Length: 383
Image 1 (cartoon, rainbow, N blue to C red):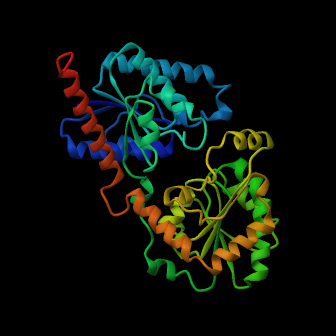
Image 2 (tube, one colour):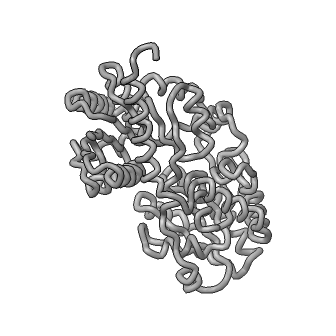
Image 3 (cartoon, one colour):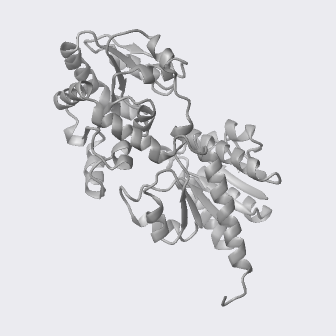
């Protein structure tokens, strides 16, 4: 079986590597071609060009790099049409991947699979119908997503979220970090997020420090924002511990924390995996705030709330992202985290913790649907 696989960023490389490992476990004859990062290359992919070329092509960079992006899209489509793989698997990065799939589907009947469903449940529901024109099968990270994809005409399987396969620090490692109240502060992984949230988070931290004198504040960082975070917290009135990027202590601090103040995003699932109660806060540029508020189709953007079908995680989004109410919510959660802990446990259960690894589930779904489609294609017309 020949599989052409494309990932365009680090998170996709991780998903792709786990999927490839699963396919190799289930099919001894599988071979890979395409584009991916170091993790996918360990699993046997020789990337046709560095994945980093796609990783830098976010929304802000699309215009100046449009010609290079368009050329790579055409190059990938031509390579797929020339090599005629059994399956094309594209992983996230829809601006690139779905354009490749569209060109491939327009010129062939190669089966197309897209890993990570678009958030049509949150906004822009029309994306599902457009995807269905060139995607046969979707691998979903969340259990509530398949009906949206199936309604648009695509096969879709929930395969579990990668957070359930992430290692969690042992209680002993967390306990070794000492006693006292630990507040994890997570102002985002992008410079724009940190720039918008750091000052407000600093005011929240100051209010918490007054109410909880023994509180210790810890900020994990990524390489892209570490220096900016240090620069921002230098102006805070309360001392904080800024962890170095990729430190081995990060997992232990996630486990040790009594509560977290976090920017909106998948970090809420990482906190849930560690049973760390949280408050979510986020703001964006004023124009984006207006547009998104009008397009949003859900009453919460926090994944723990969505997956658990509760609203136990307080969130302060857009105009509601104000230090006073946020600080009050953190203190309330710290005092009574019970309901949120139940919701986090339910979230992890629904995302597949304790079951088959998501990569293996994804591989099995790909193979099952491929075999099903092959049988249907072999059926005499009219049967």
